[in-house]
Image 1 (cartoon, rainbow, N blue to C red):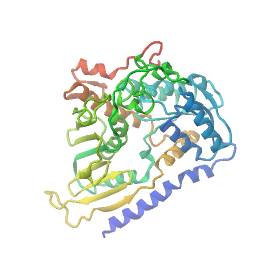
Image 2: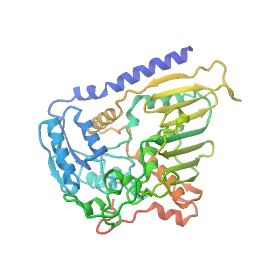
Image 3: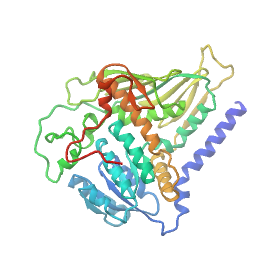
Image 4: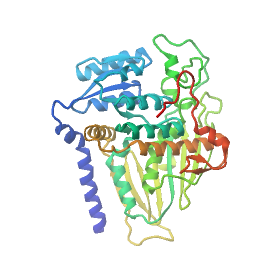
Length: 438
């Protein structure tokens, strides 16, 4: 083993140990009076997982929970009382929750089409925000949210928690040190093997206890259909962007971070509903998007219904193909596989054995955010990072929906000589909701 490789392994272990201890260190440094009071908007899936991570930290209290579904509220009120010994207040209208002067932090766990308005309103109200990814459901909303955070000076952490997981950062540090030579190809993928078809079902009356009009919010008015409600919202363009805007923002974020490039020159996507052509999903179950940066290409690849046995059952990941070897990273860890035949093969290059994950990425991300709430420092996944990758994912989806290659002007934040494509950048809100003015 080379000295450089020994040093890297040693340093990585030190970094991982330090970051893994972060929640304890941060909490230990706070006095009992430095309690942070949290309000949760959107309490079912990831929103509740985020709330649990907050409550695992010391000196955090949930004061209020807001959701459009009374069944969800009742369950989460009971769950919260079990954890903290005290019932939070409940709301169905997030604006009432934001009026609370005693709440310091808002967790925005709503569907994608609701990320923009509550986040900006929370910043206006002087709150700090932990918001789910992708940052917004359109590039226009994304840019407006960046503007709002700059104006109101709020601390905003986007829920791309891999930004706080040390093994992802260690992999990028290894890349940036030039260890695998020049990289001209990057691939990110998500094979969603657990996901099955969504059969077409008829519309039906809204269930008791659900404020469906509030759930729709700025999205188009449609009759209630259980396929579109709760977790299934992700597969409909009105509310989200499918796998690309779910897993894609996590993985493509590190693809860009590893290359230290964020603005592609062009995008071309293809795919469709190849697995379940007649089911109710609108977003593609199979898709590839190729981003050209001029000096390297980045390929996004997703499928629903298979895990991808050809990747040794690595259902997701990012691979950087270098002259000396390929670095592969996923939530389980990272490794480097040396090249055996390459025009740029490096004699004696040993690669890197698997460097495992801590498995504490979400807790570390929340700890980092809470520390920044107190120090006013920039969090690990601030608004700019979240904005870069949200735009990037939307570019791939827009190319898919139009069925053609698009050229992007990152400075102007628009497609080049393409008025039709530029209409997809905008958000058309349903009255009485309006895009916030910042």
